[in-house]
Structures are given as structure tokens and as C-alpha cells.
Image 1 (tube, rainbow, N blue to C red):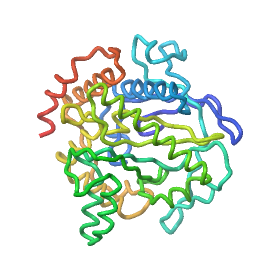
Image 2: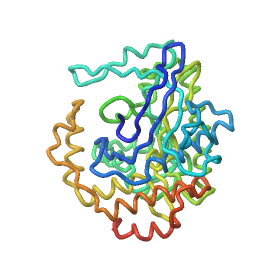
Image 3: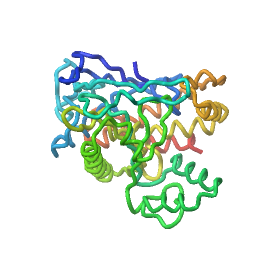
Length: 351
């Protein structure tokens, strides 16, 4: 069981053959790498499944290779999103092997298994893209850390990557999209320089270039769709598999993978992150402190447990996910109130 998705394996993958599986998108959620939080968000799983499936189908129409097979309807038959009359929380996918790095006594991870030339594996990287800096962006933390260390040249180079001449403010969009890499299988997402990302990827130089080219095609399509329906896509993450070539894996362009804004307000999991930062800062700070210790089971160091959300907030966030998903895919599968009305009712919880 994952923190938010469950995987049913129908056919095991091998080095020479893709497997088959089913993602079941749950109503669970996770923030700050904690894992399952105390509440379930009603409708969240199906909302994310519909967005992810819509994006895969949009990308496949442009011949972008992915691991997507199809969404499953109520009879567990493969379908397309626009052929559904009710939302679904299940998606059929092609499976690659998961080869996890080894955690060493030194507190570091070994990627010795990811030798060049292997086939059919989940690339052990997350690709982060930033088109802007919404509230909560880790970019602000990075800049602050560099400032405290007096690393002015590193700050300048960081700003150049996004086409900036001065430090951004929350809500700014950048002249250029910037890309970063983090680890995928480590206990916390560790930032990587491009050369380290390449060295642990298991990909050849040509294949790593293929991944970057694919990334550069996917992001404008997701961001463009967001723009079409009134959202702003500030940032997001992508994951990939390798089977006789690089393919987009996991899911992309949802309210959990991305930070979308609507009328100047967050329509994403970031809303929940900010709620905990404001209403239970001692838990958030304990998580950050534990992560800094560099141990794999950092959660065991956190003595504070996350509290439940207010029940009214749980219901409103569920409506936000469902109405937002319908707006993004251009259908009315969830039959919820207009997103504008829901966002109005959420506003008191933001302030």
C-alpha cells in the first residue's frame, strides 16, 4: 500500500517484459512525507484518477510514451475518460521493476544496482519543474539558506535558471521554466545536482537526454491545459520508467503532483500543507527536525502526531478536489457546486 495509491499486480514485470497492474486511487492523503494522515478526503482518489487519466490520454495523442493503459469503468473494463458517465478511481498501467537503493550504515544510499544497460525499471528520480513560486514553494527556503551562508553567486545562478533578475515573491510567475531533480526512493526527497541525477539514474547519456526531452514536451502540455480552464500551473513533479526507451510513469498534472492556483488561491494539496503549518506548527517543525537527522526511519523521532482536520474542512476539501477535477477535464462526472463557490467557503480556513 502506498500513502495515497494502492497497486494491484496482475502480471509481474521482468527485465525483458513489462508487467500489468492497477492503480486504485484512495481518499488518503500525505503531507511532508509523513504517510497516511488521520483523515480521508471524500472523492479525492477518483478526482485525481480522472485528472491523471485525462492527461495521459492527452499526451498519448501527441505520441508521448507513457505507462498508461486506460481507466477502468464500473465493470472493470478499459475505457477512456470521455467515455465515462461516472468517475472512476481505478487505472490500468504497464509495470516496471522497482529497484530500490541500499541504505548504508553511513546514513547514505548506494545506487550500485542501477548500472548502465539494465532494462525495465522505475527511474529512481523525481523531476521537479517550476514555472513560478507560490506560497509554500521550497525555492524560498533554498534562497534563504544560501543567503544565510553568504553564497551570493549561487543565488545569482539560481535566479538565472528561471530568467529572474531579483528574488521572487510568493505568487510570481517566472520568465523561464526551471527544472531540478530529487531522489525518489529515499526516505526524504533529496535534491540532486544534474550530474548526480545522471550518475544514479541507471540511464546512459543518450537515454538521460531522452528523459529531459520528454520532460520538456510534457510540461507545456499540462500547463497549457491548466491555462485553458482557468488554472495556473506553478510547479509539479514527473516520474519516469525505462523500458526500451524512457516513458512517463506514475501520474502527472494532478492536485497532488502539482500546485495549481485558481483566482489567486491554491487548488492543490498545498492547501493542506499550509493548514498544518498554521494550525499545528509543532508537528510540522518536529518533522523537519527529524528529517535533518539523516536516518531512514525519521518518523520514529517525531513524538507529536498530526491532528484531525475539522469535519467541515474535510468535506470542503473533498468538494474542491472533485469540482476542480471536473473543471480540468471538462466534464461533469462529480456533479458538484461551482468551484468558485467552494473556494469562497474555504477562504476562512486559509486566513
